[in-house]
Image (cartoon, rainbow, N blue to C red; front, side, top):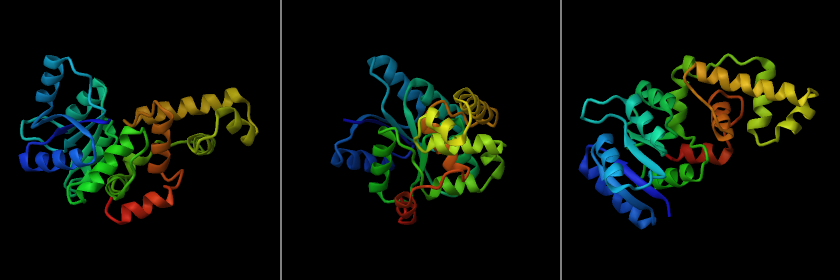
Length: 224
């Protein structure tokens, strides 16, 4: 069962999410108003990190988006930002800090449950809110990859083994590996680290190197 933590300084929002998670058989292990309370609960109970933390974009305790997201990610949990959709700059900041995705508070509660399930399965969360945040700031999306790096990333992020990528592009395996290493370095340099293959897939879709699957686009159009 997916273990979920809910962090929002509006109790009514938390209560609604708790009820939805209960219906979907998600185990809400923590529900509170700030990240410090969550971390203190972890220490006091010696509990494992939640699989997914649903985090309000702006809390009323004076903390920043970046410090909240990074604190949770470094603690071992994936983060979904649950926010109103009128602050794209803050959303981009959260994504840069390591959040797995964003779901608007205007979305149906079932969409939040779908997002939790998606992120818990290690899959990229791509929806209208994510696309709007990225497309609103081209500097965020530009890691300045070379044509060869884009080619290698496109094939590798699509799921091909690196050896197959090298064969298809007619280059040595070591060359393909070096390209992927440079791609990761460039994403780190622009504040968008991609340490895993899933992260590389997410970056490729963010930057238009790979198209989002049609099912995800359709879902996004329906308010996912």
